Length: 502
Image (cartoon, rainbow, N blue to C red):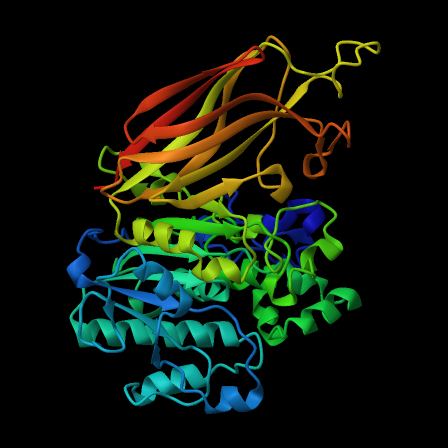
């Protein structure tokens, strides 16, 4: 199946002897009812919703996986209201007016967490709801639909109790996996009723946790034991399970193409530090088996923590009519520390309550000098043409560094150019929400010619790893503009686009 269709391929049917190519526009006999995007029916258009009705919108935090033994699990009350944890504390650094849903359960603008672990039902849940939850065995892959039903029932309960019209989701790790399942399966009609306004994910398990595939490796299994990981949850976080059972619209785990996700305003914060803090930064769990040298946060590969694309018809429509894909920002933190970092709070507050997104893009480059060797006798430079270009960047606002990408964390993208070439690159520098009262971003950017970047197969020199072509350090006003950068090596254009959301 993988050989024919890659990781985006859905199920393979033995009697067909072919890969089910869901999403190709053809309803094949093998696909049956397993590919709604090809075989239908499509859900009806979603009703309009408001994104600025903050006095009528509850914010529900869904926590990630944790180590819970059987006795604790058996005694825990699922569906119980809980604090929003570290994410809630981080958000309140920038939104101190957020109402505590534990203290004020009837407030229509509350921030509240929900517990999905446990076997004990809450007192507010109906017998039918309890039966629906208990139909799923939490010790198996059925834990995912169980968790998702619990969260969906809780959201409807809190909306009814508070009179709220909308809900925003904020999540970490496996909590984002739970929300995706909830939305793609339209549990309690939360997606089809258009009540979900915004979704902010932090190190989210959106395309599955490839760590689950590595548990036949004894070294990795032993290292995971050091972290007290609740490995039973890795059964349903396995990427193949996500493809088959969570990304049910078209079985493309890295895309938000389901019509049920249409119109939700999304931002992702992803992690890039592979050193796991819970082992005193000793264990680099995913780097024990990382042949592609992919960026990761020690538990999740970074590329699996965000939606890479969304069908055009489902994208959020901004005030000027532009259709916006989900945006993402990077932090050089591991899977655990990123959950409640100051940057997570700053971006989360903007993602959940802000009215603008900002896009900084390296649009055009004219390469005057590639800083590669001109011939075999040129010892002034290392490496061979063409030039390999990458952007290192740090972005801050309100004194908080909210985005960073460096070659060290393996997250910058790569472009190749020949000396004398002048062309559009369209390389992302920063994209994301900003506070409504913010006037400028603090930006430090370096455009580099790279001679050593194993992730992209660049191994020209291990001693002269990269050369600076041009750099910028300063304040970037939040208005549409073009920044012109120039040096003896390059001329570059950075576009600044500020997009009002409504």
